[in-house]
Length: 220
Image (cartoon, rainbow, N blue to C red; front, side):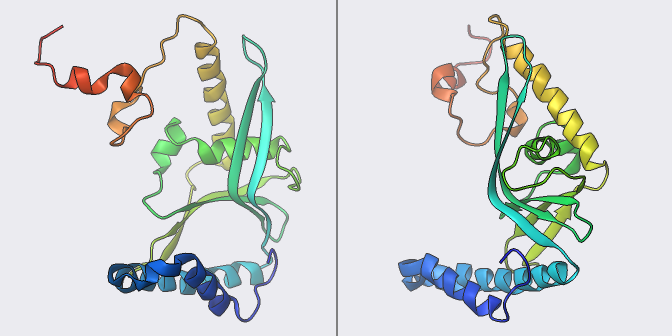
């Protein structure tokens, strides 16, 4: 439903959720904890969507695939993305949304390049790189945080800098990064930003992280 929602949107989404949860709903923990949170999300989401759509918003793409090419020292570099959702407001400006069930990145993290997903998607959109999405001004970059509970949902918009500025900065940062890795001497570090590393990394085994972590301080 890219435009107005049907009157039975809440019950329909609830039924879809029941089908997806499936046999998991027979587990007491899921039924007592996760299912009520999902129902909270349904109520918030339908109310939020109805308000936006009644104001003239509509959805242009969900899981929209986009791409653009940037010049690099070793040849053209192709940037691809899958946007959770792209809307347009009543004036035709684009809104790029990313769904989160956990804590979304902070504005400083986005602006500094530590969380470049939305700005890079904005850069692709500004270049006309998403299928079925017209090239247009971007009105908003935002996270839709869906978690249930006392605060079932939240729209977290990036408001401190214009979307086009964030897009240009992220694209410039990507170009610098690609140029750096086009140099054969550039090392591929398994943990380039240790303060943001989770419990597991795809490259820890290659860097022998566990082996080095068991060594005594000062050993070589």
